[in-house]
Length: 199
Image 1 (tube, helix red, strand yellow):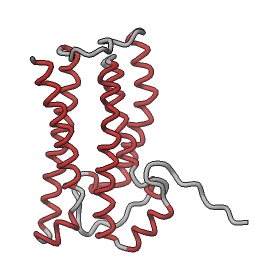
Image 2 (image 1 turned 60 degrees about the vertical axis):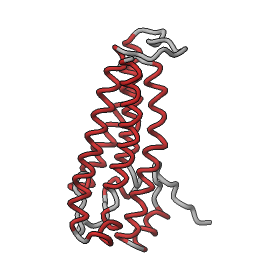
Image 3 (image 1 turned 180 degrees about the horizontal axis):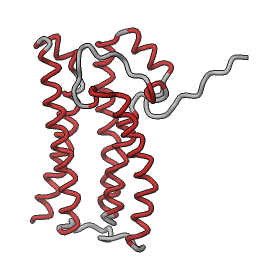
């Protein structure tokens, strides 16, 4: 019973993470309805989204003690150290990308501001470095916990993060207009675009 409750909370928290984060990245759209207080409201919505991300992490840990009855084995067939090494191989570049993205986005990472200008740094190469780094951390956690189920379950965060990025881009088009549309043409969303060669 506890296993199913934990799993239900995990699913609900994943949906609420998507909902609150998608709402938190739409200050320009919300400003059209409620005025400039939309930016402060989006800050609070982002905090709520972050809270649900922590709930998801707690659910992952609880899952180890209360696994669902599935055909998958509870642990990978190899030593925990192998899972840990695979997790680190994926996790170190993911965290690095996330940290660099956060640094280059500055305060906008958590608190959107109307006066903020378009980003530089790593954002000249890729539009969503924080999302690309963060989405892999769910699978890393599944590996570190040595759970095949959690590692596979982590795949649901790829479409969730794509939807969150799409929501953000719609709002950034409202905020920055043609400049952002041009930026999107030149810069890859999740992977750097190959520069076009002229013949």
